[in-house]
Image 1 (spheres, rainbow, N blue to C red):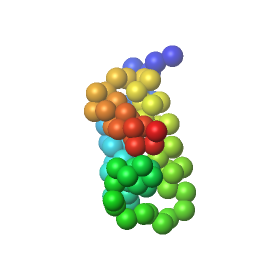
Image 2: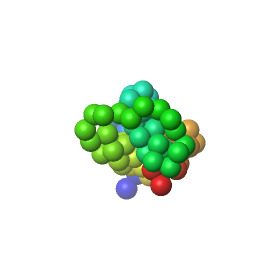
Image 3: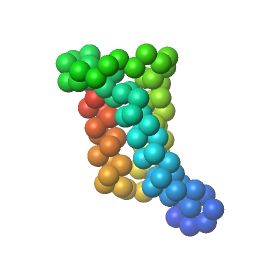
Image 4: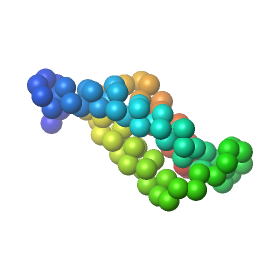
Length: 88
């Protein structure tokens, strides 16, 4: 089922356009992706010492993929692929 109009469609659209990108900005600010990239030498950013930063990016990926399943968004897809490249 794809939501295209109404209350929930509006919430999903807001999530895709504003909330998901805002969370990614915060994750980048806290070097969450850098923590993964450091493991294979692709980043020299300082290690983020906060607990469970890896689960934060996984939760973000779940939300982003859910949004993409409902409506295609080239920028969001690019960000998902970038995050997956950092993790894998």
